[in-house]
Length: 156
Image (cartoon, rainbow, N blue to C red; front, side, top):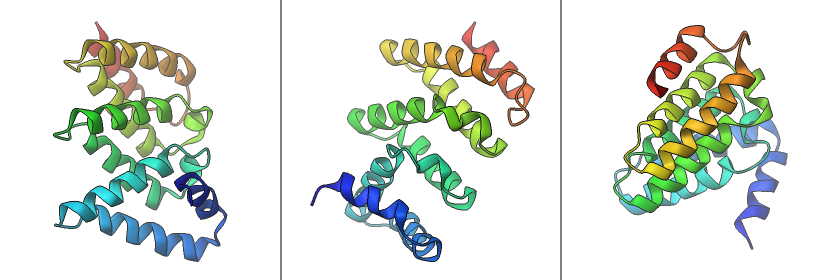
């Protein structure tokens, strides 16, 4: 059974069931035991690649995006790279302009950290992504101007 099929099915579940599953998944990512945490994070990251991920309710979306952001600082370079790529990809989604302000701020913040990355190709990619995102978000109600200003300042 491939994980993408599972991810597709998950989003079709009735809201109460989805709620329980996502809450459990979040708990799993916070477990003491590393193998549970890793399994949980892999699941969150694969959900993050799903087209409907950003349409999750804020109560689930925000903690998951925060978890992915934290993975940008993981010990393993591969985990850092995957998490950063995923954050960039989320930040460039069409839905960005209709997301709650908290989520937008979180994504933009992650982008700006990407810009400051020691990994040059990553930093370059983040800067390009940020430019694209900020152009798309300029003057939108859900993006605090100070967030954009702060990011623009970091780019120079």
